Length: 172
Image (cartoon, rainbow, N blue to C red; front, side, top):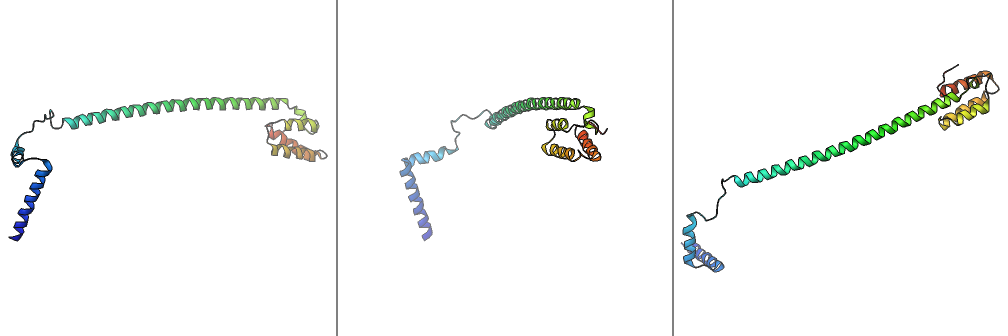
């Protein structure tokens, strides 16, 4: 019984606090409780799912717009990459053609007799090697072999064979 008294006292204090806090009278609170079952005057959506459908439509439109923008950006990047690739291919093709022309000019400038033991002239062959596109190490090796072979025809023939091979002329 004692607990029931405490419970009723707590309920009265809570109710008094509510009335004091809201500024309503007991009659207003009772009317609010009675009116809880009535329909509110707030207009409802056409259908209960209409707001959700509108949100879904907006999200779909935003997603489609984002996809279109991403597709456009990807196409633009692909176009730029293709243009860069075409430019690179053109540059590489031009460089290869220039290198081929330079090799042809070098090879055509070599006197066939110059790279034989009988027609050998060290200074002319040295000029051909030093003005060629051969690497520095290969040039030094060929020149050293030619200088060493000057006094020995067999060594000179081997060195000249290496020079002809380096210029792509084949052995004679």
